[in-house]
Length: 244
Image (cartoon, rainbow, N blue to C red; front, top):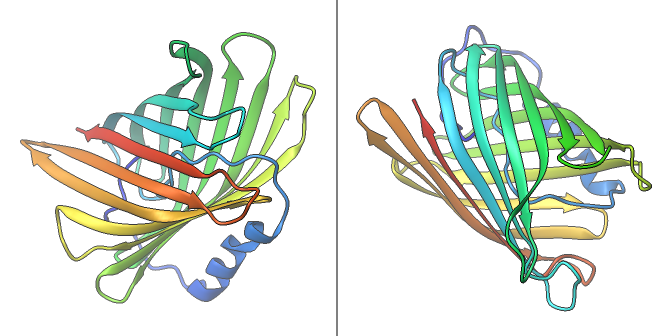
C-alpha cells in the first residue's frame, strides 16, 4: 500500500481537520511496548488498482539483542472499490548469521471514509497469523491524510494491536506521521516520526514515482534515529512497489 497521491473522491467531509489531527496524535502520549518501523499507510483507494511490492527495514541498535535484525514484507493488494481494498502479506525476519525465515502471514483491509483533493480518512484492520505456532495478532486504527497549503502533505496513522496465543498478550498503541514536500512530481522529500512508549524515532525520507507505460513504480527510502536513550539507535526502511 504505497499510494499517497490525491485522487478525487465523491464529496468533501466537514469534520474540522484540527480535531482529527489532535485525535491522531493521542497515542504518542500513551504506553506501548514495541514499535514497528516499516510502512505508513495512506487511506486513499482507487478501485481496480493492483499493487505488488516489498517493504524492508534494518535495525542498527548497538548493544541490543536485536542489533542488525532485518525485516521484509512481500505484498499483493487490490482496490475492490473506491471504499475498500484488501492486501495479502508475507513477513520474514533475518537475524545475524542466519537466512531469512518466514515469520507470519497478514491480511490487511482498508476502508475509506472519504477522499477529495485536500484530505482523506480511513480505517485499517490487519489480521496476522504466525507461520509456526499458535500466535496471532489483530491491529486496527484510523488513517488520515491532509494537504497543507499548496505543496505540503501530512499522513498520520494511529494503530492499536492485541496479540493472542503468546505469553506477552497485551494491547499496544503506536503512532506515525509523514510530512512531505510534494511540489516535485518525481522525487519528494519527507520527514517521518514513529512513536510509542520508550521508543521515539525521527528522520528524513525520499518518496519517488516513475511512470512505466500504464504502470506506476513507487519507491520510498528513509532512515530514523532514536530520540531518547531507550529508543532504537537507527532504523533504515524502504518500500518498492508497482501499481498496475
